[in-house]
Amino acid sequence: MDGTAVAGSDYTALDNEQVIFDPGESSATFTVPIFYNAAAAAAGINPDFEIILSDPINASIGFGTANTTIIESDGDITSVTTDPIQDVSAGQTSGGVIQSGGVEVVLSGGTASGTVVSSGGVLELLSGAHLAGTTTIEPGGTEEIGSGYILNVSAGHINGGVVILSGGEEVVSSGGTASGTVVSSGGVLKLLSGGHLSGTTTINPGGMEEISSGYTLNVSAGQTGSGILVLSRGILDVLSAGVASGAIVKGRTEIISSGGTDDGAQIHGGTQLDYGSASGITIVSGAQWVESGGTAIGTTVSGLQSVGGSGFGGIAISAQIYRGGTQYVSSGGTAKATTTHSGGTEIVGAHGVASGTQISSGVQLVSGLASGTTLFAGSQVVESGGTAVGTVVSGGAEIVDAHGNAVDTAIAGGGTAIVSSAACTASPPGRPIPER
Image (cartoon, rainbow, N blue to C red):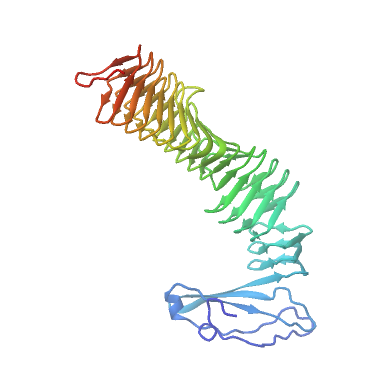
């Protein structure tokens, strides 16, 4: 049957060909003529077609389908490969060994019982398929989890050589182990409390690794964790020299340890604790805590970004604060080049430092030190004990409360400074601050 190969151009189709086994024989040979296809070779295509066996008499068919590929180069056919494929349909049960190059596909209602997958063999399970007995995936063998199939790995079981295809799921329960799993685009590997991973887990682009209640996933030195979803009570811990990319944190915690890196995480109601390096993080809801020794670059904030507080040295650079979002710079924390948009707030607490903030709209509340702030709209409120140095007011208003300090404020056209009684202000000649 044609695949990319076409009967008559690439091979000769054998319709109603009989293959006869003499008594006691377990194998027989027949020939399919094949032809070199210059156009396919020029396009880099290796034509393939299927050989299908059917209607056995006084016998049964094991692998009834084989995929044949014609390898062409340098003006000639260099090789031909034939990989057997067996479909296990509703009501059928298969067992035995899948050898190298063999493929067994278990369809809805079909059962694979006691199957052994040798190196180079493939067992594919589709939605509605069943497993019975003990399935053994030998080193180099592959168990493919197809669309709609959920593979449960329970206590005492070790599942290796698994490839999770689009729409497939593997669930690793307490005491179970997933070894050397590959998650393809659209596939999901779910890790429950007490589940284990061994070997190298590969999450391909578009694949997902879900960390559920009670499970802690450690991304260690030299490892990269990608496509990770952290659910309620799950924990993602990125250790020194580990890298997490594109994690989604819902309702629980990601910890970026000193020396660890996270790029592009999305925080949806969860918490990210940053003691290492975080870049391109999006806080939809929930919080990012940039702790002592931590650096966050380019965070988009619609929830909370807290900088400093538990020590000195937390730094946030180029954060974007949007409606409903707050950046809180507490004692020991530093925020550089923050931009607040409409509905966003930057709070500079006592002993916190903000430099180069741009207020497109929104509010900056200063109880610590703010230097080089530029107001285009919105307001800067210098509260009691706070100091603002070198603010440029192009629009909006600088409001200096009682016992607040404003130094070297510059008022451009359309800007306003409002200074309360007992506030302390200083400005260079020619740049007065009006008192109202």
